[in-house]
Amino acid sequence: MGRQGKGREEHNTEQSHAPRVYYLAAENGVEPHSGVGFSDNLPYMNRRNFLQSVAAGVAAAQNIPAAAPRMIGIQVGAVSFVDEGVGKVLDEFQQDASINTLFVATFTYGRGIAGRQVPGQPLPDHGKQQYDTDTFKGGSYIKTHPQYYKDTVLQDFRASDLGDFDVLEAVLPAARKRGMKTICWFEDVWSRDVPNVTQAAERQFDGRPGVTLCFNNPNYRNWLLATVEDYTRSHEIDGIMWGSERHGAFANLTRGANPSGLTCFCQFCESKARARGIDVARARAGFTALAEFVRGGKRPVDGYYVTLWRLMLRYPELLAWEQLWHDSLRETYAAIHAKVKSIKPSVGVGWHIWHQNSFSPLYRAEQDLTELAKYSDFLKMVMYHNCGGERMAAYIGAVGRTIYGDVPGQELLDFHYRVLDYAHEQPLATLPHTGFSADYVYREAKRAHAALEGTRTLLWPGIDIDIPTAANSSKSTPNGTRDAVLAAFRGGADGVILSRKWSEMKRANLKGAGEAISAG
Ligand SMILES: [Zn+2]
Image (cartoon, rainbow, N blue to C red; front, side):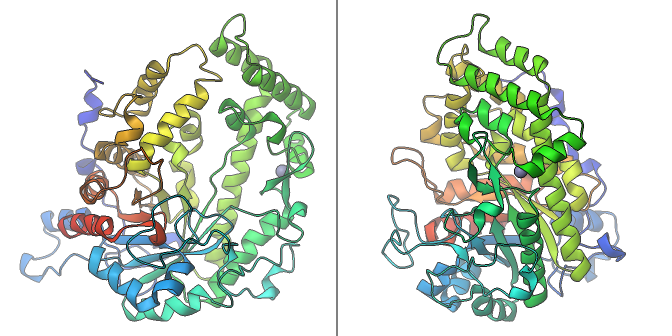
């Protein structure tokens, strides 16, 4: 699609902002200065700042040390270390892509960041050439210390699929010896099999417990705080990243979710709503009306989009409930951040921000980076270019059946490209087969960089390496991966996180990222 007359695209933010600080600093009264990292002597220097310093004549040319490396991270699950050996994995990370930071999956019940390659996708060129379909369980891949979990009923969540293996015990010393940092990476993905989990679960619109847990339920809130306390006190870690790939009932319903499964309508959320002056009965009536509309299967007399607006005007509680959900997530972020900092200020704390941010204007509106920056040392903004095409097409298909039921798919995609500020992406028919371009990564990085300007929060885009797509959809390539990393740097990223897990990545594509890292 063409773009004309948008002068703001030419605005060069890279030249106009104050230099960003390096890694974590001033949160706890330590003034930022060059060369201070969040643990010891491996600072994540922002090369642009370094160059600006040089340009400003801060350092005499002959005495300038080599620029410290950017944060180059990779997500890796416990199974890779078990299958391949810690030394081999770390060797390849260092050789292939100059990795200096490990994002070790410490807890999840999902296969996105743990376990081997997902069934149905080709196995990569390393690791056990066998699927773990029958053996994968999920849970905590490190030993847990019961004294921290006294205030929650969630106490039995140790993963059993790798026996007694503790991924931090196995990896931390080896990583440290090589000068690599280790960040615990855990996510908001649970299983119904966890003992007592329903006592922490969200309550669905139909009254049944969900498989998702509620941020306002003390059992879950306390578990999250206990977990980060356990991580911080029990191990010499450098950071913690947590991610929640969810949003509220309104956003879910507009994407066509089953109304009976909407969350959260538990007692804690309802009393929090009442305290905010939200009429719970009106909210329920609004969701019932919205559900009838999006699932009705019949075009409303005034059309889909007009009817959406009519319902939002009649039931402002719909948006209030959505905001309640997101505020609860933000409070959770802030509480986790405060807990870790109260124990060990040098441990960095940040969040994985869901890919939905690249598709849904509503979800993007909810990711207010200026707000998040207050309790974020870093943000992993997901910018998965290759699988992004397929995912965007799916998103357009979903909202094209609900709130935009009158808009043909290509027009709807063009509208989203326009309002999300993508310029050079493919039409709907080919998008799943091409993926997004590197320009998408550049624009997302540039936008996030601008939003974080003036804050201390570092921007670490998530880069797609071999994230599964359908058989006939586009696949990662070395050049595509290289260009995505270069685009992230060009957009102002302070590092990159190669995603989602080593057990699904091909070495050739990791080397593609490595080329960009050497060049960038
Ligand atoms: Zn709730």
